[in-house]
Length: 434
Ligand code: FHN
Image (cartoon, rainbow, N blue to C red):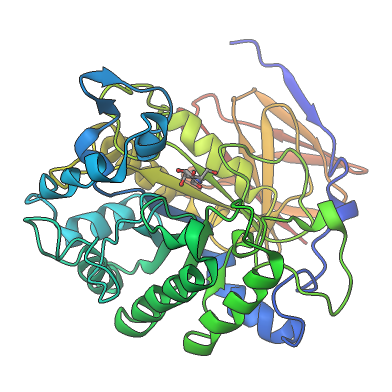
């Protein structure tokens, strides 16, 4: 193996945009201190499970024998299915193999600290017992079990914070077109059912806010409404019109939508101006899609997680359970492998923020006086510019192997790496600064 030096520059463009504590968020009357206290668990968590599940899992991306393009949860729109032809899917939704504890434990074993499941997606179907409609899992399916209730109960036992995804767009409720104010009351009514009957939520991920009649003002009103039931819940920027701070700049005292921005299936390349979370599909669909086998491999997923935390962001990785109630093995296996990696390297992820060094094959995170250098390759010798005095360096996943030899010449840190690569995908060298 050619023992090439690996030189990377310290903090190219990273430090300039350090996240100003708490200023970009939420309702103007909330203090920075209160905001940062509220966000602490979320910033510590860094890695969560997204779950897109609903009657669309029955169709699994196919309609009348044809496989439709695009994500399976959009099939009602993609295949232009009238409500009357779509509704019978519910009578075939009977996920008898569903085990809420197994879902929560898989998230735990993957090293995920929170869960976000679809209480209602764009097709309007409620995966909980709603008294405001019979288009829900209790009235329209043979299953007649409240999935949201069971998961919200199972998550705390697994040490996973429970949360929901709730769509503002609703293809099933005619009021969305005919009587929007009444639809907004319906939306608020179902949220009240969820916020008062399913325990404390960690986060709420709103979506479908692009419908023309939804406004930032409606978003602000909804945020106040939600917080009147659960003041501490973290809410994404899609409660408004998905504006991001750097789009409109920030005016002190002006309402900014939600607590964090939500890039989708992309990971920023530079430090965003406020808290953010990338949500990512495991293949190319959010809902279960029978013919979609384009699964990302474990190494790619771990690099994506590292890419997020190394820019102070969270990674919300999605699973699409089948109509039987099973999380596809292709996802479960890779999640467990990610969990094994996090067992050995979690200190370099949980509660960390962006680090001072970044390069083609290197990312870095920081926590206290520790800097974690995440190497996507394993050069014989690592040379990195680091403007801080170093007192110790070691392989995070194998501290017993002893400290590594390093030299510091000005801000150039050179570390001799052991021949054997500690990890197949991302190896972490921990550096303790003086
Ligand atoms: O249309 C939805 C899609 O089905 C999925 O829920 C993603 C996840 O964030 N969001 C929307 C597309 O932006």
